[in-house]
Every structure is written in structure tokens, then in C-alpha cells.
Image 1: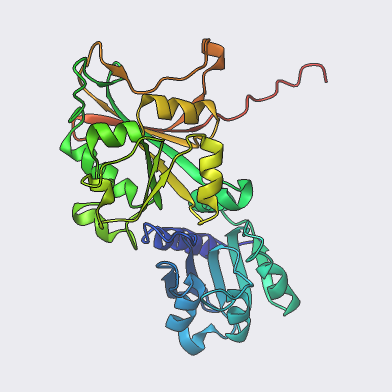
Image 2 (image 1 turned 90 degrees about the vertical axis):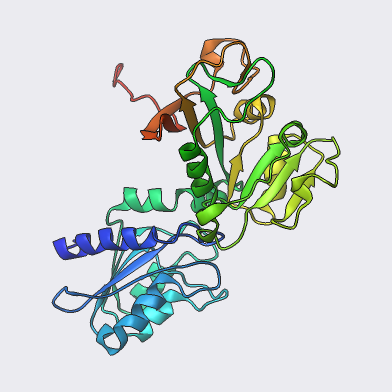
Length: 345
């Protein structure tokens, strides 16, 4: 049974893990080391691919004080050797007495660290603040659990759901504050995807800009789907970020190709037809909408789906509603299953 000090340490570890905005293709992980009196003696987090894992950073901080200590980690310590060594073995070598972690590792290559630790005589407790641990790795874990990247669809519209005016103008419906927020959130993904229609109409750069480009280890992959050619003079051919052009538009096939790279988080910024196709395919895992305090009128809707009736429309649950400058940002996730009533039992 976890102690109060271990629970508080886990919350510290979560906060530390989130200091790294984008660690893809690795997960965000935090680690706290407690001495025998349950005092915090080290706090580490993973900074990105190729960098020491959170456990290693914390162990290095603690030094010889790790003998008989407790490691509190947001994710089950790994057992495999990649660019860095196995964390489970490092904890054993450091003389850690007890390991407490939140979420189990869904990656078959890295999972099993708990068994390695127990076999070495380390006391292991799994599942402390498990829901928060799962939330922390939600995007990263999605590829390992489903075989496809996590997809966030972002759109901007007026309060009537229109994303462009009748004359086709769409810049800028939302505020400078909302546009800055988009760059901040882009930094959390490793691919930004649009269709050739949007590419030809807007000539976007699809990069993380201003002060937010330091949040990601590198610019996300720009992905353009569709058969139309993009002129060489367009921004998508610049050297600012890598770009992949895919002639196919089928969402399932596109995601299958991206998963091979591997891409973990696709930021979907396509027009209404492309967004509708991805919604119809059931591959949108999160929606982030920016709603400006204006009525656009008879222009383009933010999305066009093929669902003919209301009962067939994709359904989501609100996760968060916040104000960004003069706009509202709404975040939605998959709709939770309806609770059973117990009738007929």
C-alpha cells in the first residue's frame, strides 16, 4: 500500500514529466527518489529521444543515496536496451529497495520491467494514481495499443461553425492568441496533416513558429494527402521541415503508412471534406476547436461528414472549455460508453 509521501512524490513526478512538451517517439516520464525517511532526494524527467530516461536522471542526482531508497515513477521502468540501457537493471544496480509506478508499459518491447525488479528482490507496487498515469501517456501509448497514431483534429470557426466566409476568406477568424496557442499545441505532435486543397488554397508553412519552436526537439513532419501537385514555389517545399506527399486519401491507409515511420501523434488541420472523411472513418481521437465570437454566415462549414442522420454523427465528450484571448477553445475526446442500468438482472 502506497504511503502518503509516495503519493505526493508521484504527483511531483507527473509535474516533472510534463516539463518536456514533446518526447516522441518516447513517452513523457517523471521519477522521484525518496530516501529511507521518505524525503525527496532526487527528481528527474525524460527530455527526449536519445536522452537519459527519467529514472537514470534521478539516480544520477541521488548518487550513493539510492541504497535502500524508493523510486516513484510515472511509467513502469523499461527492461529493454535501446539508445539507453534498461531502467529496471539500473534501479537494481543502484540498490533501490522499492519501486512504485503509475501506468504499466504498453510497449511490448519495453514492458516487463516490474517482473525483472521483483525477481531481483525489489518491492514493487503498480497502479498508484493509475488514471493520471494513463492520461500522461495517452498519445504515446495509442500507437502501441491500436497499431495506429493518435489523431487530433483542430479547427477554427465562428460561433455558427463556419470556417470561411462566402467569398472564401478564412484568415483570420480567430485571434492572435488562439493562433499562438495552436503553435504551442503543434509542438506536442510529430506530424501535421492537410489535404492538397488546403495546401493550394492557403500555401501554409505548417511549422512551429516564434517562441514555441523550442518546445519540440524538431519540426513535425508535414504530410499532404491528395493527388494534386503542389508547386515547387510553395512553402511546403521549404527546408523548414520535412514533408511527405501521399497521393492516397484513405485515412486508414495513410495512418498505416505513418505508423511505419513511426509517427505517434497526427495533428489534422485539413479542410471540411478531409476532416469529415477522417471523422467518418472513426480515427479522430481528440477534437480541439477554436470558436471566435463572430457569425461568419453563409460560408464553408468547418466539417462535412457523410452521415445522413443525427444518430449516425460522431459523438464526443467535452474534456475542457477555456478562453484563449477573445475566443473559446473546446477540447473533446471519445464519448464514454453509456452506463448500464442493471435492468433485467
